[in-house]
Length: 316
Length: 298
Image 1 (cartoon, chains in turn purple, orange):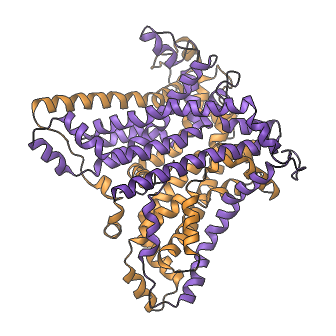
Image 2 (tube, helix red, strand yellow; image 1 turned 120 degrees about the vertical axis):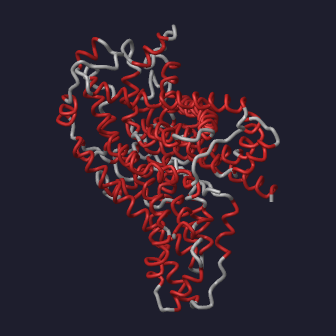
Image 3 (cartoon, helix red, strand yellow; image 1 turned 180 degrees about the horizontal axis):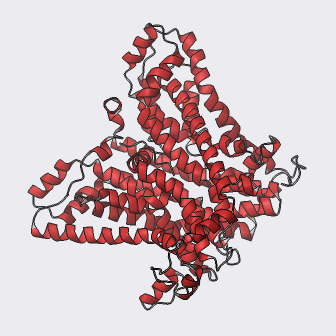
């Protein structure tokens, strides 16, 4: 199996499986162990735990982003403000809507095409190139190219609608057009990542299973439905959670292509934090919004982790 | 050699197998395979269009683009747009900044994460489980969401506007620790014990046994860290405010929505922004794909 960003609970057992060696004195190992772990822990505590603590503290003060210092204590009133703010909930909804629009496409389409591509003998490199190359392109370059293709009247995509007898939506002026623009761009940009994850999983399925199925008279469609799809279910779960978490953290493409517009109707929550914290300088308030959003993301990760653990122990 | 040691990780297996046809050799199976092939090839060709379109546009004169916006051909191919794009924005600086930042991030990440992974596998120290649990929990930390408190922290440290502000937050990468952990775990304990009996220090065991045997892990982590770091947008946007100190993605983003008539120049900038990583990708295609399937870094 492949290692994953969110490891299987089984990996906790990894630390125990090497018994202490008789050769090394425990005392020396203790010191060496901490020396090896210290650089990582220093970075981890300073720049991963640190911001969480700082965010928590600042959210309780009326800090401004322009001046040093935390300002004065305001208790939980920043949280009350955030939770009763329409703009905050609107931006939360935009991030969720983006996730709802992109996740089904980015979980299912790469699956279908990875299965199709796996049935070809040659030219695997070509699919990897075509689908995965966009993933290494910086978001800003993707947005430059797509903004050009979305140009009203002259853009390639705008004109492509006309070839099929359709009228292109207003990609920059209407909310639905803007969502269409940003979802299509995201599909093109990140499709290859999930495609590669599926392709790797398909290649781990033993060839003998297919041979046996062929002897039993199973056609290609039956093979896909009864062998490939069930065996890919764990990978689908992984792709799904990675996609949900990535989509909920959307910022780059919406900010660069649309600036959250038209009229903030697509602004995602990270941009809301950015706007309140860095344009309106309301540091304490933006920190409270950060913590709310942070807790939502952690709960989703932790929830998935627990579900996985339960299904793993059920299988064991 | 390394491949045999790390075979449990299944990393190299994915690509060394030759591609094979799956499915029945009968008539229906062939038709299905042909249909699938057509479908996926068509899709892949569509996927290449944005790249080709940017390239073609960047090589056409602006008047021609304005007159025939959707013609993929030119009678006057020209490189003028590239000269203009290079002269009108500090692209050279952006390249240098991106390169220095990404390289330093890779070096720090590989060293720091492999060291802690080595300690977790081979050393029994007090508090090991706490460290392990902490790193496991770190996988769930959405660091992108924490830019605001991070910004406050770096302002307090007086590091805003420096390379360090971009490099330091991405060094402690929990995923990288687990990649190294799984590779180092596959090294036979007897090898380490023999070296210890010969009087090698733990540092030497790490440097001369663990690291050389984890080369696939080093390259996977290095390549993916480089790509992630090169393409990072929000954090560099916040901390690098001087035009000349920006990275490629931040610099390029300022061109979006700019002069609407300079199509060729804009596309030339986009192509120049894509070029370095695309070159790396073309050379290291296989390793990159392998690295992604090993780590699931996103």
